[in-house]
Length: 393
Image 1 (spheres, rainbow, N blue to C red):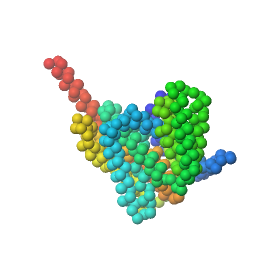
Image 2: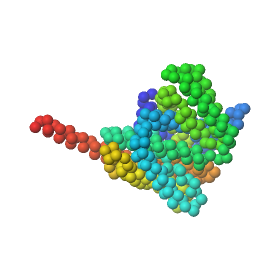
Image 3: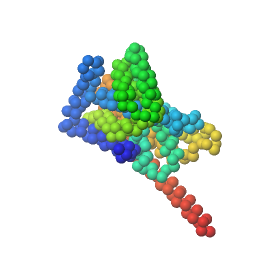
Image 4: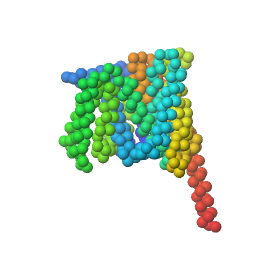
């Protein structure tokens, strides 16, 4: 299990699953796999009737969002975001990392009728960004990793809010109210756990979570928001234990399955000039917009707060953080599905753009993080040499 918890392994699984999905979609097996993805599975006696693809993106991914929400709550309680002074600098960088890609996307797609896809390049995939950092960034200062972690977490908060606000159609207030009752009951049950693991309570909580997810789906609010609400509602210490149990499941199964399903797209047989505007908007906004936005926001944030507490992040480090922020993958793929749900061809091109834009960001990030790690390694070697000379003098 420790192997699957590794950030490097999680990133590798995600990349391989997306690559396999894209490859198989463009082989003779592609049409059968896509047909299977569109097949509907209903739960008898309930109004729940979703395609296999939606069971994955609305159902399985809600578990991933639960884990993310638990991590968010922990960071706000005892982690890197537990005070205004800690949160304000990555928050400014995150704001730049959301605003600039959205503006670039809107500028590229202006007049096309697809401007509504602006949320797609605003997201950062925490698992993948930290995986790339773990692979190529051995030896970089902990302050940069903390800055990137806080930045990615805040980015996820924005993504969750965007999904809740902009991708909710005709909400059913009755079902929303009942889902809220489910969240409250989930919180009460989690309080009764205390420091112990009680099987009967855990089973009841599981049933309440499933019912709450169902009510959220039926309400018109995107069902992944149920995972967020339940994760934030659960008492922190029991929630962290559940997160520990679920982490191998999300890393080793849920995220790869979603990546495979989302990447199951036939590459359009069209000339580059015939690709829809969203393709170019996403492809440019993810790597370029994130690097500019996060670097600019990070630079501005260096002037915030007491001088002795400001982060010492040079331009190289900020560019590396920006490139890592451009790895959209999971949440960007989800937003692409939501934004272009009624236009299959544009959604397919958007998926390709997310994969390509994220891949470009990975390459840029790998180069920047590797050279940054080498710089700090040389710096430490020089310091050690100077210390040895002083001792021998």
